[in-house]
Length: 213
Image 1 (cartoon, rainbow, N blue to C red):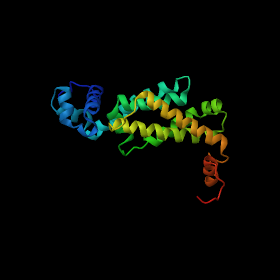
Image 2: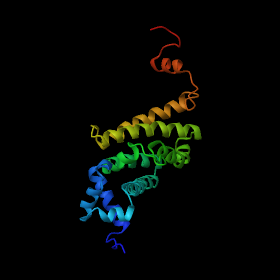
Image 3: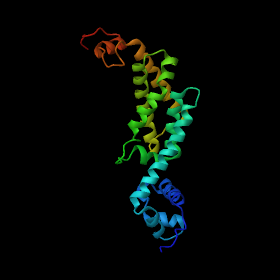
Image 4: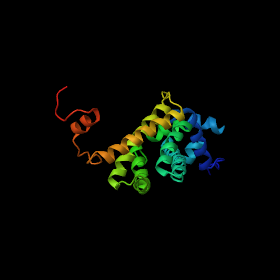
């Protein structure tokens, strides 16, 4: 009879998650996990069969951590603002989990960056429509464009290349929010990309459409 494993799968998965948080997913090996547990690698393979099984557990745990941030954002007074700020907070506080979920191509794309955006987009759509008095199509365009900015800032944070404070990030997001709202309300067909780009730019700079510089 094989000896009883002194660690549960949950305990081993928690240890693997700690390794990933400190060393990244590439730093997760049977040895680093065993070192974290203070044991040999034998219990790991007894419990999971292979490191692929461990990685699947870690990925699922990372998703749960991220979902906690997203849920907190949805509970804010302004949900579409809340999820954006929580996405940035997740990047700042859990950079290796952010890297795993949103900057690493995995076999299972259910929780990719774009899948996450589309899921949140559907959840905040009613609030956007109510607050800004816009259509569902316009709300989706607003959220997508602003989320792309949020994702870019979050990625800069994770890669250690973001020079902006939280206050400056808030100012950046406010500026984009105003710009997108004005475009939706003042440029017919903007949400569907069915507008005259030349006319829109000429109106901004005070020139007539078709005029030569």
